[in-house]
Length: 225
Image (cartoon, rainbow, N blue to C red; front, side, top):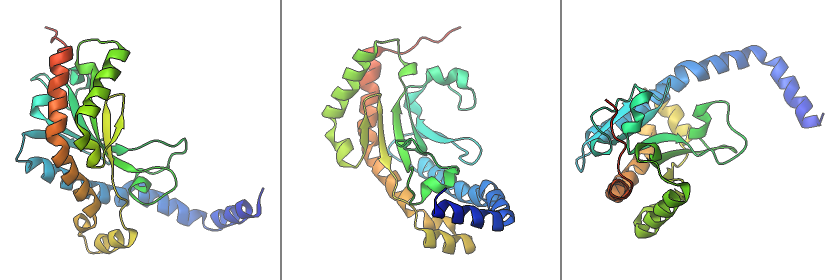
């Protein structure tokens, strides 16, 4: 065992009770307050999105936060019922990039500068919502869409040929979060998320055109009676 690991082990043992308390706070009140502030920010964005009618589900602490245009689903879609997700054509989600083999133990870590992961806003063209198609045909389509709409990458979105475009969210400033946590004004510490949502709004018309092009090309899964 290296000296650094030995020293780390010593610190852990000496502070084991403090680490237990920190873990409980991280998994409980601390994460819940910050994630609720993020959810409130995204919900407000969705409700005030004047260019389209958006709907969403906001529960990042317990589940997930995602939203979509009301044009990107049919009447049988329900956020709470995964069996209806085949009636969905595309959506936005708050999630992590997940590009590295190493992952963080706490979701909250992904919001700050760290060695393993980043938070993103992801646009997903939901392949399961369209008629069955070959993987090659699907990949060719999304690559063609990416070439047709270079404005998306110009706004900072990264492209995944599975049918995703995602935007890295700038890490939150630790001192700003601490200050606003103490003053119960966490929304004021979330400027990087606000900035990312603004870019998403600018890209939304292009994403909507991609969804409509996918519907025209592949068709939608027929509802089962």
